[in-house]
Amino acid sequence: MLEVIILAAGKGTRMVSNLPKVLHEIAGKPLLQHVLDTCEGLGVDRLHVVYGYGGDSLPEKINNTEINWVLQSEQKGTGHAVDIAMSHVNDDSTVLILYGDVPLISKESLNELMRVAAEKSVGLMTARLENPGSYGRIQRDNNMYFQSIVEHRDATAEQQKINEINTGVFAAPARKLKLWVSKLGCENTQGEYYLTDIFAMAVAEGVSVETCQPFDNSEILGINDRQDLSFVERIYQKKQAEHHLLAGLTISDPARFDVRGNLVHGKDCFVDINVIFEGDVVLGDRVSIGSNCLIKNMWIGDDVEIRANSILEDSSIGELATVGPYSRVRPESEIAALAHIGNFVEIKKSRVGSGSKVNHLSYIGDSEIGADVNIGAGVITCNYDGANKYKTIIGDKVFIGSDSQLVAPVEIGKGATIGAGSTITKDVPAGELTLSRSAQQTKKGWQRPVKKKPEED
Ligand code: UD1
Ligand code: CA
Image (cartoon, rainbow, N blue to C red):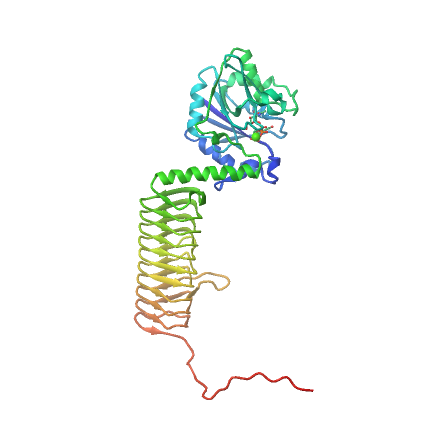
C-alpha cells in the first residue's frame, strides 16, 4: 500500500494574506491542487492532507472526497504534523511525504524516489543548489554516506556552506516512521518538532537512507512569498510553452504565453503575444490567434482567425470563421463555419449561422441567426425587459439595416429586409422590406441661430 501525506497546515506568514498559502494559485490552480494532480497516476492508495490555518476553507475549496483531512490545530512543526497524520496510516504501508507549497514536483521524480526507497530503506530527495539559502543541509560522512539533516537556522557557518539540501520530499516504511516521529523532541532554535530529525534516527538504527535527485531542480521550489509565486508561475508557463512549441505550435513570445488549464491544438496554429488560455481549449489546424486574447473553454475549428483583443468563453467557432478584433463571445454561443464577428460586437447565448456577418458594434443575445444573414452596424437585440429574457429568431438570408433594434420575442422571416434605423417589435414576414422610421422632412429657408453680441453698458 502506498499512502501519501501532504503537509499543508502552515499559514504562510510571508504571503501577507488571509488565504491559506496552499490556496494561492499557479496557472489558475491552487498550489495544493497541483500536488494532488501529480499524485494521480502514482498508484496512491490513501491520501492524507494535514491542514490547519484557514480551517475548513481548505477542504471546502479543494472539495475532494478521496482525501482524508487531518486537522493540526496548532502548527508545532513538520514532525508534529506527520506524527498526527501517522495515526491514520496502516503499519504495512509505504508513506510518501509531500508539501502543499511545493507545486512543481513531478511524477517522474517521485517514481524514481519510490524506486530507491526499496522495501526497508528510506528514500530522500535532495538537490544540489548553487545558493542553498534557507533549506536544510545534508550531512554525509567521509565515505559520502548519508548522516543527518541540519536545519539552516541550526547550522554552523561551516555546515551552511554545504550545497546539498533537503527538498523535504521522502518515502519511508510506515511502521518505522510512526516510531521515529513519536520520539521527536523540539530542542532547537525554533522550538519546533523537526521532521528532519528522523533521518539521524534511521541511520542510528542501521536503516539506510538512499538519496535521489529531481529530474529538474525547479521541481523542488517551495513557495514562501509572492515573489516565489510569480517566479514559479513563469517557470510553469515556460515549460508549457516549450511543450507546445515542440508539439508544433508557433508562439510569438514564450514569455508572454499563459495556459491556465489544458490547451490542445492541431497543426500550424499561431499564437501572438499576451494570449491567455483558460480551462479546456481545443484548436483545430491552422488557427491563428491575435495578441491580447482571452480564450476560455472554447472549441475552435480549422482555419479560424481570432483577431486581437477578443474575449471568448464557453462557446464554439466553426471552420474558416473570423472573430475580432475587439469581439466578445460569451457563454453558450455557437458561431458556425465561415461566419464573421467583427469589432465591438458582443454575442451572448446565441447561434450565428454559417456565412453570416455581424461586423460592427452590435449586441446579439439569446438569438438564433440563420445562414448568410447580414447584420448591419449597431444592431441590438433587446432581449431583456427588465425582468425576463426573450429570444430573437432571424431566418436565412435576412438583411438587418444598421442601427435597428429587434425587441424580443420577435421572429424575422427568411430573406426579409429591415430598413436602417428601425425598431422592430412585431414578427416580420419573409421576403419583404419592413421598416419603422418617421418620414424625413426638410424645412426650407431655415436659419441657424447666431450668437448674440455681449450688451454694452
Ligand atoms: C522544511 C524542512 C527543510 C527543507 C524545506 C524544504 C523541516 C524541519 N525542515 O523547512 O529541511 O529544506 O522544508 O522546503 O521539516 N507544515 C505543517 N505543519 C507544521 C509546520 C509545517 O503542515 O506544523 C507544512 C507547511 O505548511 C509547509 C511544509 O509543512 O507546507 C513545510 O513547512 P515549512 O515551515 O515551510 O518548513 P521549512 O522551514 O521550509
Ligand atoms: Ca517552506
